[in-house]
Image (cartoon, rainbow, N blue to C red; front, side, top):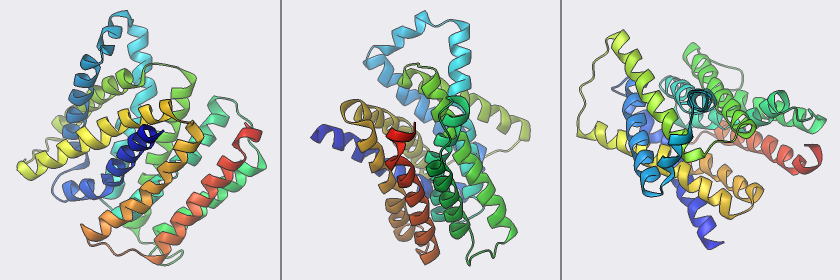
Length: 290
């Protein structure tokens, strides 16, 4: 059990740095440039992991249909998720963007109802309403007082949450090895981002600080955190370990405060508490409602 919490703790620690590191990179680079290099580091790291653990041999049994289906399942959780999250983070405070991103557990429930045919209950509807109320609270400097950039950033971060929620539901419907499918998806994400960068003609002056940021995002946030989280879920109870993930946005606020010097706004804390309350209401009734 100690190993279970160690794995979960590593994932939570790395995930909590995503908003801060991404915001620093987005100060001088486009969203697609950040995603391209970060995805390359993630893909190569997962390739090394799959070679070491011998899983790479399983690809010999994959047919074209398996590769296509794997990408259709995973790209919403890699390419679309990070594109929307980076674009949204570039337009608003990193702390706000990351909190709104934590709508994804509720989106997972919504897509489970649509794709997996789970029942839509009153408890789930209350959870949805609370979570969106939390987003409204977080997004404005004052309640219901929005500027254009905040509105666009909020919409993009909500789309990121929708993308990741879709990914989790699709991942439950079709069962492929998570480490292999995530590796393939990050390679595809790298190629798609490279194509977009080539078409837009955007060039970047990449220095050592950028490379360190890409390496951190790709190796630790995208790759290692995914592997350790899968190990934690495998070793411990899914519901109990999943609840630990809600430490992440609170820890993220600490990083954005000390490194980016973003003040911790009372409305952000209230909005985050409302979002988490909605998630816990759903989790409490999950066994009986599903």
